Image (cartoon, rainbow, N blue to C red; front, side, top):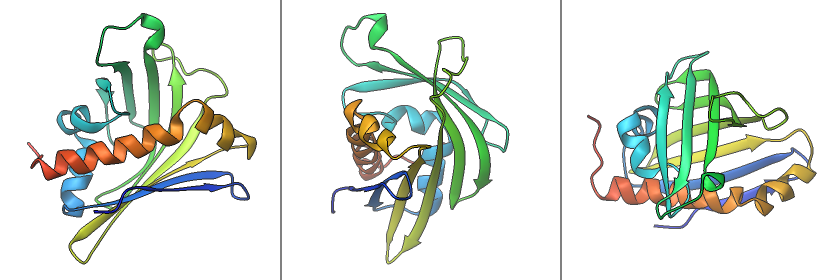
Length: 169
């Protein structure tokens, strides 16, 4: 199965990461919207995700922490908070993702409108993550902090979880 593709669209100020997976759109949707599945694959290689809140509906909140699998300092943790804008099962999620404090307070200026598109054709499901930025320079900044590698790893982990038979509970 081909690896993820990454597009840095400077004109549109967007980062797009895409991958095909061998699973139904319904199963991929469950992996994006159910905590027991997200825990298995969300985040870059070598990181774990703790989900503190997951309310998948317009206006609902997803609050999470990413932390390295190995021993780590608290500074190594990354907290996130997303607020859903669009929930259109099993095809589209749109949310405003942001870096956050452990309390859940959003770090000002870190908001990233994000859209996940899920499509099914010819036995494969395509997953596309698009992150929008207010300035084109933020694309390079996102890559510098590991966001491109992180999303590529994340979709690879999703494909592996699905290949291992991750089924909705």
